Length: 226
Length: 226
Image 1 (cartoon, rainbow over the protein chains, first blue to last red):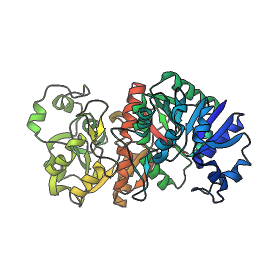
Image 2: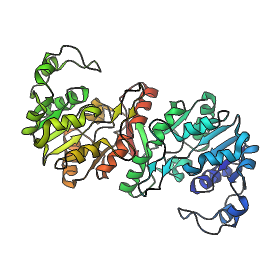
Image 3: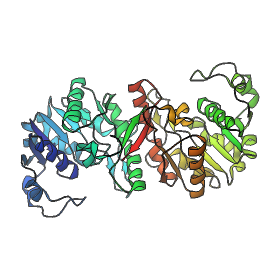
């Protein structure tokens, strides 16, 4: 399948690598491919620059946001939250009718650590994206765990965490759930409801950040137990 | 131990009943004891009126907030969030130096369901309580599960959820953790840090509410898995 992964940070590269390893044709979307490929500095998490990383990721090509989305059957948004709407704007009408898996979180680091959320409570980034692109089928998911856990939830030895999906289109959520279970290995996926339920998973981030601080590792998740 | 439980709703009665069953001397605090005891209507969750319920709860006495707190070695705040500060005001200086376990959540139902939070992101109800009563030792905990799970986490067959504690006083958190583990049966308690980390657990409520809607039962919790 042709898949666009928008964003070249830790999350984008991790998702793109996993999907390519499954045999998919992945376009890694960025604002300026030449500038992205010219970078020689590591990323914010010590992740390798894209040009060097591509050598370990056959099946991934770098493209503009619009080019990445144009031919894609499935789109992942793996940008920083404050870039999400602008990145989707870069893809524009190419998003119409497509399933857009929104992994981004509305984290605001402008007042230092720990981050605040720049939208919460009455609204969410997922809803903002859905309102801005009403013909896209936004599905919020994967935003509540770190990148390595997103593509390999079984890395957590104790038990798998739970993943949630939020979105207005039932068929899109079904397809994304299939991607989560069959491609990424998630065993417990819960449909929370329409895109307004993205408030719930985005507002989990403050707890995630503090638990990260208390545990000293991002290798954890939350399992809904009954 | 003499314990005050402030609030006569489902949470207050459940906590009071459990503590009394362990042999503690529990004062159930309310604004107007005579009015509370005169009620014959069930509570918001179909829970019995206090007068009838007291027959099943030997060891519990009804008292004003101030009287309940005066002799208590430990205080639980089990009020609706929008009443928390006023209820603590009712106890006043009697709170000084005491450990105050704040279970309340800043839920705002004024715009209908699902509730919003009336404080979040930059602040929390736990912090508001600590600022208003700087000599009390506020510990935020138990606010992320339903009342039956609070006092019997092993009711969940699959595995126990995780409980978090937030507070500025390390010794108070240690004592509350002991209450959670030895009296209430919690196996996994994580210290998130100072009282500002109450933002994290209070902001879990929007996800809790949506998961409650998706599952159709309040008998669940979130386990931190690694």
